[in-house]
Length: 305
Image (cartoon, rainbow, N blue to C red; front, side, top):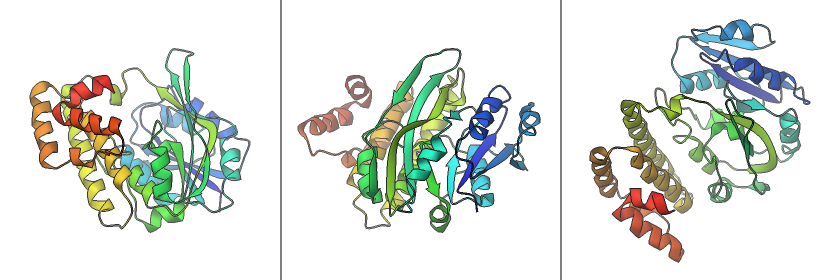
């Protein structure tokens, strides 16, 4: 059994996939397998992939969620790492992660760097590391930082992932938001290392930065449905979920600000009806004020926070 399974969904990334795979095969720690899920790519990406020693799974185009789920189902490693095919990792990432596995954690978090297409600029997001916390304790810390729900900022113990029957929701945007907070919360043991090992490419004209308003509306609809799922699932547990509910509610409130005024007003009413604003924490004066402002006007609140 390899220590790590690195799952890389591929769809029309011939411009980026070589750098991604080179970063994997240049790792200083060698006990890993690479699973490339060809999600019906229409360009020459797979011609490049064929040059590397990877396990390839071919499927019709079904999106990132299904590709990741397929990869997990075929993985053999003790831990799973989700690597997007336009991103790349630092050469010592697996070595540093392996150092953090002595307590058999369900999850290990590592740090992310933003890199930009057609620019040499970079932006690091360093954090304080921690060790041997339960999921609630870990989430309460992680939620204060950047890239909380990004699946690519963690490794997951495969047996834990399978036992809990976690899966990314098919056909949706923001599938990480709809799953990863719950995965963290339900974990028995979570570690976080301060090694900045993941380079997150900010692409021009990416699917997540589209100006197509129909897609914007779908993103908000998907976000709302993910929120409802997370609430339903966390309510099935006896975990202390105050911070969790505040985080996912805050994220949803900010998300509706992307809508035009007509749709924004409709969604604001929906969020009031669903008592989303009630979930916001009020344990400090600043949070009490923020809650009042958000309830009155999320768009105004977004501008001043």
